[in-house]
Length: 132
Image 1 (tube, rainbow, N blue to C red):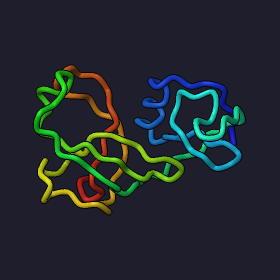
Image 2 (cartoon, rainbow, N blue to C red):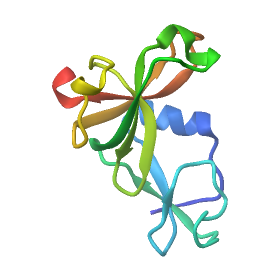
Image 3 (tube, helix red, strand yellow):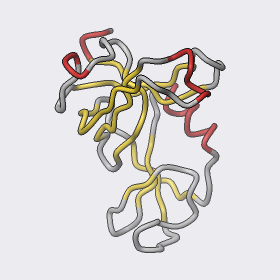
Image 4 (cartoon, rainbow, N blue to C red):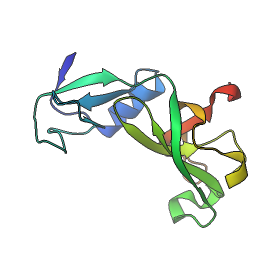
């Protein structure tokens, strides 16, 4: 376990893009995503990096048809909350039709980093395991 004091979100996205995604975990086992200096649940400043699982499971999702302006050209799209081990991560699910019938709770996905169509900014993306 590597001690962590702070990490920028951009650095975390870099790590995730390189297959080395991680969560910050306190001694009580609470996981969170950077940047953090203390555990948001118990206040512990003793945080360590724990690797995210290489795959995750969709826990819930929403199909977005009327997006915020930053996602205008991406719509419709699926936002998903995925269990990635020590944390749940929210991102965009790609590689599936953006309708509720094409996505299911329990779908196995791989987290990564891609760009938004609208503005080219990086974001967390999940792809089904059979989409490789």
